[in-house]
Length: 333
Image (cartoon, rainbow, N blue to C red):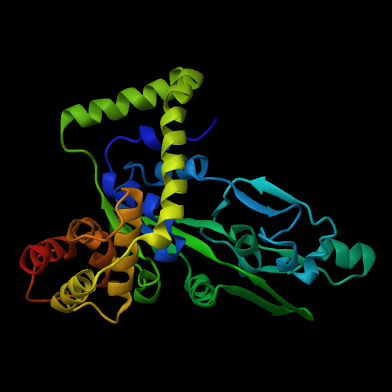
């Protein structure tokens, strides 16, 4: 059964906007979605796969290279024709082995032909796409360390069994989890550009609409998909237009001052907060057809860009979202 349409997801506007912004500008750095079970986290990520525009890649290239000259030598790609393929969204399951993530020696070829050959892993398949980790806060530490290294460098390096292999591994990291099951390591938390908190709808009308759409998707799947795929197609076209417009969106000195002032007031660590806030606001401006980043754009993306970058304040019992909202009122009225 095809994934639930992205446009048909009821509510969860902040989560949907965060995913759209990373589709416009993957450099924002990924999305962390934390919330209770059954709030549509996995549904939204899987729906994103059908929404994203396809990519152009060399046919048969295991790392989705955009140009024939980018294909790694170890892949032995002889057919350099270009083809289109869906933007990859690769699941990284809990309990996965390091070899499965990074790639390893192709045992079958080693045994049958006596050749040392590389068998690509999940990072190769995720290049130029998305890497999705459900229950990311339960991921084993050694896999977290591996992902941190690759996310920092944009390259996967494998050296074992006499092999020395490199290949590009640039992907948007999307993680979801339930905060009741454990916290995320600060190092990995900082690698996510945007952080979103989702919860179950509190009003009965919204809950009824969720039930109606899910029921229609299961009972009349073809009719439901035909209705909503038109809206997904329109959103896909909007993402493509925003990608073209993105380099032309200006950010004035006033906008830069607003970014720095807000992050300084919040006490966020480092400068990644300002940079992510600006990139997300610029992507939002491109999505809305604006030619310049406004204070309104900054205000809309500030909670997602900054809530996970705040130091804990034992004297402030308010949550991080409330702290961002309070400082937005004070710094960016």
